[in-house]
Length: 169
Image 1 (tube, rainbow, N blue to C red):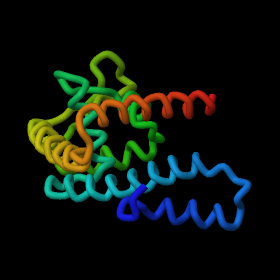
Image 2: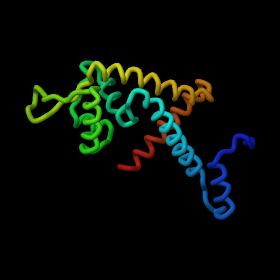
Image 3: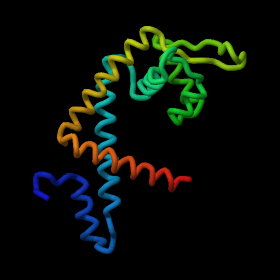
Image 4: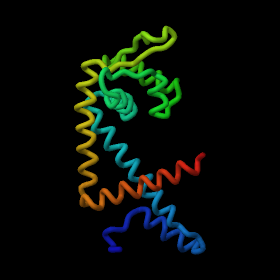
């Protein structure tokens, strides 16, 4: 590895090698970089969504509704399950997005006890612009790799995620 390609994780690994040469730090190298990449890209995504008046969490709600297809309607329970949020966390996001006119809550016509959440026209416009802005940021970051490398990385991360989720069960 060339000196200019070393990063903060390499420095951490070198420190551990000096004080605990018995440790296999390969996992730390991988997950340390995944964590740092996630933080870096999360910050960049917040900046990309800010001009649209939404946070990453609010983007996730709008994007989930948009991906669901017309009529862009889901129950709060479906949204919570998809986004792995508590109902309290979901309520806060829905309140903010509804107050901004990006979605509306209405009674479920099939169940009087339930609600449904639907994107408004304005919400549809905002999410369509925001998703483009976010993808531009992600595409720029990925431009350091060629298509084959990006495909290989996506496959490796899919395997790693499946293995990690499998150990949670």
